[in-house]
Length: 550
Ligand code: FSO
Ligand code: SF4
Image (cartoon, rainbow, N blue to C red):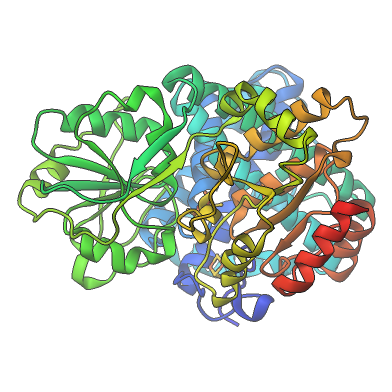
């Protein structure tokens, strides 16, 4: 075994990548990621002590979220970047330790090794990494829960980072991340303790998504119902992918008047729904589909592509020179756009675009979106009437992620076969499985309501809570809403934990259950929350609609 990683849905055989990641991550990068997480745990241990004496280290906070983000699936494949980060992590850890001591903290006599281990050379890093990975926790249930919490914290870090760049910060969320990572080093914690911490992770998942929602809507306005062009124009252009709206804003500003158009890709599609971005005439629309189709779509786009976050697919040589990474994203050989004082300089990308042909058209027409909580709650009367008259019988939350596995055709078929009196609520890149189907509308309400990016699953929870209030129900589970969620990476883990924390039961999770759930931990989720997998469209549909009439 060269490595061990089972953090995403694509993991080899559903149990773990051991030679090389199915995602393309090499064993050396996987091991360096493990080592980085290990040192972050050391930083967390001191930060937990720091909290007791009122010590806060902003640099460590920022470093924590960026580093966790860089280990999320399809974010960073660059070994050099991780070596640099581990060295920096050791420095940050020592700075936090010194600060905590100076602030008067009494450190525990025995500290976990992640708080004390140190090394200078790459050889030492490589020697240490295989000894501290996931499998170093022997008990499979403890391991499963430690990883479930860690992945939730990774997702949380990604959303905290997006809020952070817009100057929305919460020390409480940082404190929780430190606490949770420290807990994963504590051998005295039982399965029950870790189950409780898993739910607490969900609570902070709700908080971080609420914070990001506030950051996005305060900065860019509330998403509006928008028809998004999916065709192309005849100008050179830049494609922007990922989730970072601040990068989007800076790119639109810097491309203004240059003759270069801007298109969104994959999870950047919802940028089209924000009022602040509508004023740019050169913002044309969305090009392409979910992340995993980028190997073809980046090719035919013809111009430069900016990856602001995951999901990056290891690029083909044919378009590699046109892909630029930024933030936590990295890939050896690709140009990385640095952030200096919160700003990025896209002039090189703009000059590059001017030398490229316009995008090749792959689709034409429009798709509709912008159904975040503010919009849907604005339509509440209409929605409530439709439910009362029976025009809408049931909502299906089909949020989450897309992926390249064939088994994900399930979601297209499921959406297609849903009865015409049902409405899909979606968010995240999962939507690309059905957002171009002609599913029609119910009295003017489209049958697919796209709230936005995966973090906008928060909007779906807000909508559900509002409906519960309007219908004067005791329990969110009494609503005519079913949950058929697709997951792929660790942001989906925090979304799932957030829904569990909000009391949502009977979530169907697919296309496969996480490989990191041990049989006993899976059982806890089944018994307490009614979580189940998916089977085939027909049986699941019957089950869901049976539930609907129960
Ligand atoms: Fe998708 Fe990738 Fe948004 Fe993820 S592009 S898979 S859950 O990064 O974050 O939905
Ligand atoms: Fe495998 Fe997923 Fe880990 Fe990549 S991120 S190595 S595909 S489990």
